Length: 154
Length: 258
Image (spheres, rainbow over the protein chains, first blue to last red):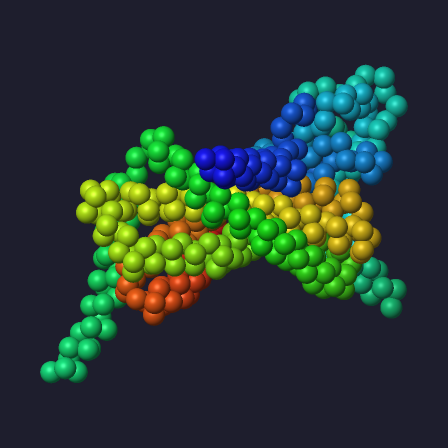
């Protein structure tokens, strides 16, 4: 009887361990963890060209991630790309004259949004738009410009 | 005449096996009664099938994670993309290696022992004895092992993935010097809960049903001799591996299209 009881304890322990592993993996190794439990607000901005910016790309100030891009869509009237991003509610003191640029990690790395805080006293709140933006600079455009200018000189 | 007969056999025998497996699957489902007695039997089998496979699953997972990290690190460093090593590791583990390798290890470790145990019960006429005592051997012997296997495999697969990630993280962070924040941060932003984690879960559940069913099936319908039991255990591993890999492809096609 005693051995049968200990078998059940071991089986229960195994089940518990498995379920813990399941929860742990779901919350730490996938994007579920970053969605749960954290309050955020959304900001939008318009770019002429977003390059290869994708949703879930990080949004940073001074290199530190403060949020992520939620959605990228095209404004059907002005034909500008509308980028909507989620910012962690901890960072709710971003000035209204903040500028945004689409930057690249390294030369060929992923695109991300870099914010440069301004000096205004009013702060951005949920649903506001960042108006000062700088579009993505594609490396292929840079190369084309360079080749063109060399051609002109020669 | 005998030649035509053997030719016919080559077609009818696999068909008969397929038909018998479908009927047997129905028989298992029909015999499943979630009462207290069944619950205790399943729990005991979860111990024999699941808990006692823990060590092999965890050790294998840890080393698979380390070797995967080492291999991908070497190639990624040629492109200066070593920051992505965690993403490569997590995606390949969640989508493919976790469920598939666990299923293969499971059929080798637990599937064979289920097949041999049921086969031996049949060879020593314990199953016939149960029938004489009006005990349904499918309900008493087959169902608890099958259900325990279906419960155990997804959990073992999660533990395999967890240990592989731990092994990979240990190697990448402590030996290769990848920054731990970048390693986990890139992983979190690139591994989707719906697309990758749930794919891992559904796959391991499907493999649990396949591997457990093939084990109980080859045990239950074995030729009741020593030779027959030997063939049943071999058949368990071989058939499980083939079916798991084929189904893996089908599930991947299905889930990436929709």
